[in-house]
Image 1: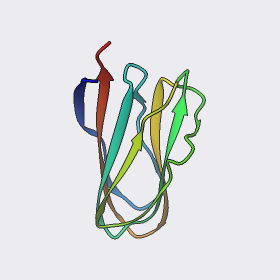
Image 2 (image 1 turned 90 degrees about the vertical axis):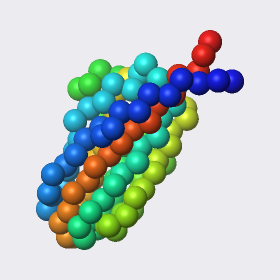
Image 3 (image 1 turned 120 degrees about the vertical axis):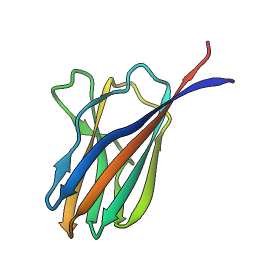
Length: 111
């Protein structure tokens, strides 16, 4: 099965953060699969999770999308089965400061 890739780079850039952070929403409903790569700098420690919504108003956690992080490093989350329209990334800070840049790669299967 061939696919058409579309990379949105970056999805968001946090700037320097020293507290919890929630990204802007991304409309993912037009795609079949997606992967998010988090690039971290500084000395941030904490965790990421993805949130999902069908109306861009009410968001819930996406199961199995939580990643524990320690910067500097790169982390990848892949989602291959979903039925929602919007996603957000939520970062819960434990300690440190730094910057988060997230890139998203999507795929649509040719039908």
